[in-house]
Length: 444
Ligand code: NDP
Image (tube, rainbow, N blue to C red; front, side, top):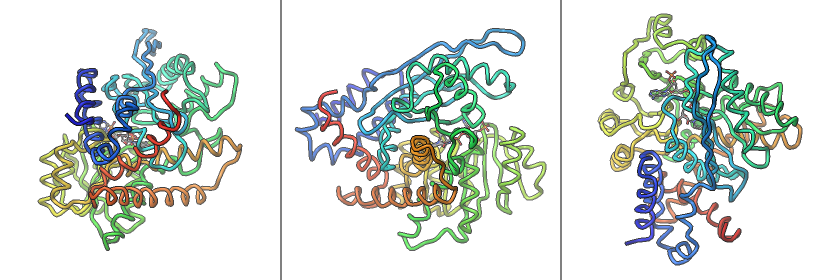
């Protein structure tokens, strides 16, 4: 049995109740086979794969808080510190009822490689809670965030572990958590990113994941002799990533015709009205039915369905496992040329393989959505030097980072004879740097 297969067996046995984590490890290790085979003796002796698939540590804790009726509620909090070979742990906090340890571990594991790809000094981690922010008052959100941070503050710090936003954790939640951290520790430090601009946040962080996704997509198109101009784009999601991906795609001359949320989706033949979408989702925090009600060119449909719309480019920007094999078949049948993931692991493994086998240029989230964490790392730099950079400065650095990521993953795939396999390229490029750091630092 090969070393990769041995470790996959081990991971499956040790983490049997965590399907998303097993899915992520399987995808990454399978694509690393050529690198591992080329260095098998060294990696095996140093147990590189066993070490990289086992988190440094993981915290699971009770989060008690009082709701508006005076009832005590209890949620479960998580922080997984996966690997800090190249820098402090860095990764978002997800607040969603579906959150469990396996999901946080899958996200933390992927984060190691994504963070490495940014070329900035950040390790991999992730956290969150099964708390559902939907329908909660601001006071309830604050009560939850303060309780969550009361425990989390024991394990994080500007040079230790720097969490950020993710699904359900936006500027409001980061603000409440930062306030509580400051209160407990009595120190003003860059312990969280995605902060408000008045207290250490970075300009362009809000836009960074969506914009970065488009900078990379544009470079990919350019390198295939194409441009974004006049292309039809299908986007899923209606949150932070989806909104700013849509905005940048439109600035680049493309037409984005869909968005979606957890209950339904919109087809807008005139192209998504970003200002209206922001009003509905960021200000009113309402359903997409309100978008359709305000826009004559828009159709609202219940359930899921954006991938059936004919497009040149598809950008899944909602959540994991939202683009399935039948969706991939539909995209290919409709002539879609390119799929770049704004969300983390939105495409299932079989759907990814189908897209790749049918000539679709496919870039996974690890590379394509790395603009968010890259700009978080830029926020950390600004906090450390007690300075803030202009929007243009941050945006230019982001653009540069995303273009470099595209070329790094393209080169890595070519070096191992897998030209055009950007998933393998991303895993290999991210992995090589982390492994070199791990080997240099000895057994730890
Ligand atoms: P948001 O919470 O802002 O938006 C998430 C969107 O996805 C919402 O429209 C939400 O619908 C929808 N959604 C969530 N869960 C489901 C589900 N189970 N089924 C269908 N739709 C769903 O999150 P972000 O935009 O920040 O994150 C989106 C993805 O991008 C995630 O995978 C995240 O990990 C990833 N990501 C985010 C980064 C960032 O900087 N924000 C950085 C890198 C990756 P509804 O409105 O109904 O809740």
